[in-house]
Length: 237
Image (cartoon, rainbow, N blue to C red; front, side, top):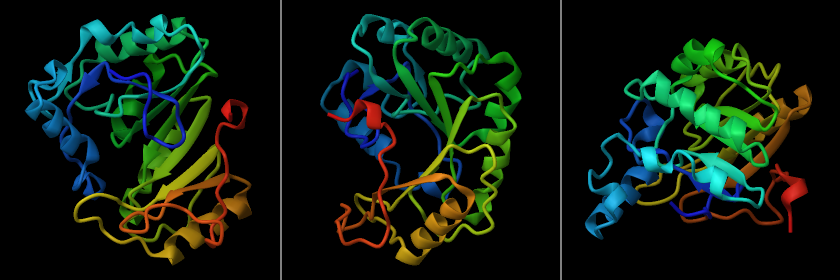
């Protein structure tokens, strides 16, 4: 897998597993699924099964080979806490992150229930950040699951943001980022939803970051009403 990624707020990606199944509306137009299909069509061996969940034992130790520190997004092409990923494999991923502690890691999941279930068995060290996706009000319960884990640093991804999310309880949350959906058939994001989330973050003293507006107006501009914050200022430049 590439040591670089197009995800705005990180510098590397590590995919010891690939493939997933849809679990909530945010999955409907999954970019990883589209990418996996293209990679299979071009004959990339790791994607011979397309978007079928596949464990890659040979990639488990990859961060140990990167001697320069990276901010690593774990499983940009899968969900580490998918129900079909063996618990022992998840523990091995966490063991590699413990050993390769000169990197920082971000783990994002929609399977907050399994994250919470396995939390007592996981080593949540200071260089690991763990987040959940909340695409609309119906999935705000994932925040409570996250808060109840032992994660040292916690974040919320509201991307793709598909509706308003009100009455956020951000106790124990370190940052929130939001973004509109991009790609084919992108669903629109109402700026009012973003402004409301930003206001809630400001009231509760939680950092907020806007990734993109999505759709045809994908990028932020300086005159947008939402302030963008840098999540990793120590890695800028």
